[in-house]
Image (cartoon, rainbow, N blue to C red; front, side):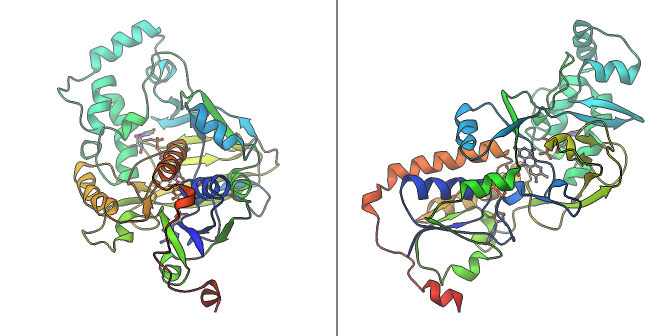
Length: 384
Ligand code: FAD
Ligand code: UDP
């Protein structure tokens, strides 16, 4: 008898599995349909021994000391500040747009103060900033929007920025100084030995059993458990009762090159050319020394694994209908990027999982464990 069945071994499921096992001494079965733990943050060594991220580049950054300290129990860190260049009009220029971006693009020598005026003279007046187009044109004007954002966003989402919620492009700031870091957060690190090692350390507890390549549907009526934590797509859980929630997918092309370096920074974005959005060279992130180098090209797609919820008002409305159903479903907690349909980074998912753990503690005193609600089989039956 498990106290918990947890569906999904990404950050949401794994953080909760560890907390329930170590702090409440409860028995957890953690399953994932993929052949590994770590969810989208999974990394592995390729055939040349280069550490790559199977599902695209994952850079840890947070302003929360609590979240950083929590993960620090399971990994040492490598200091790393992420830098991105975009190929625009044939030049590689810093993104987020900053003083150097504008000076290089236009062959100018503006100061920060002059750039503020330069932006102000080009910014469009937008009464209410609602869309991802509004965010950018109201700050830097239409020309930079077209060069850096419109094409990239149309490729990434299959939608025009004017159709997407403002929160999408608002993830990328605009700067008038020379700060060329992609993130401004206080804590910016990579797990020293990779994400997968961190997950393995987190999940190394006698109360946690892990089954990979295991579908929720295949175990739900077979394994006995009291309560469920579900971190997969919420619409799938409810068998698409209200229709499908759109999730954007990506196809990854992993490439290994027989040369030491390919590009000057970890990520180069392609807002104007190619079918892929960006190219990642992992050695910049991992600090690995190797005579070869590994890259990933990201091709956005409407088909494939669900990676991104699509922030649009009508999608949020549809999600709200599923959320109401979720709230009315006893003994099931919905956590994570797919189950709560939120475009969250890793640290936000860790925060959400820790908050869920606090709510579980408030509503379920350990000693008051209720009788099984889903006792419908045995592990022996599952094994057969
Ligand atoms: P997931 O990692 O998606 O885990 C959910 C797991 O549930 C999956 O492994 C899935 O196989 C499993 N599952 C689903 N349904 C079932 C089922 N029915 N049965 C069994 N298993 C099931 N965040 C950052 O902070 N920094 C970054 O640089 C960054 N880069 C990113 C780049 C890309 C390309 C993508 C897609 C995301 C990136 N993120 C980044 C976001 C980060 O991946 C997520 O915030 C985080 O991994 C979400 O964790 P999760 O546990 O909610 O979901
Ligand atoms: N974006 C863009 N051009 C860029 C970088 C980002 O248009 O050079 C937009 C695009 O819509 C993207 C969003 O900003 O989806 C958020 O970018 P981020 O790098 O945070 O995306 P993620 O790493 O989550 O894929």
